[in-house]
Amino acid sequence: LQGTHDAATPLDSARYHYDHQISAPQKYFIQANGFGHGVLTSLFVSHRSQTDCQERFFQMVLARKPIETLHDLGHDCTP
Image (cartoon, rainbow, N blue to C red; front, side, top):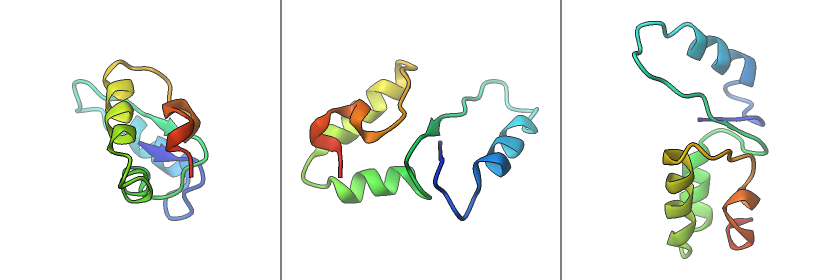
């Protein structure tokens, strides 16, 4: 799970690391457009009163639906 605006871990570096994890039997690279470092932390902290946002996030991940921005979770999950 990699934010595209992550200054600590640039997208290219994260993708390189992911691509070279050859021993993992199953893996997924989720690019979170518009997010910085700590995608899950920012979602949980920013929307602490909106626990529905976190639940929708994990439902989309498990269903393999694309998540590009917080808007994909619904208008009430945007900053």
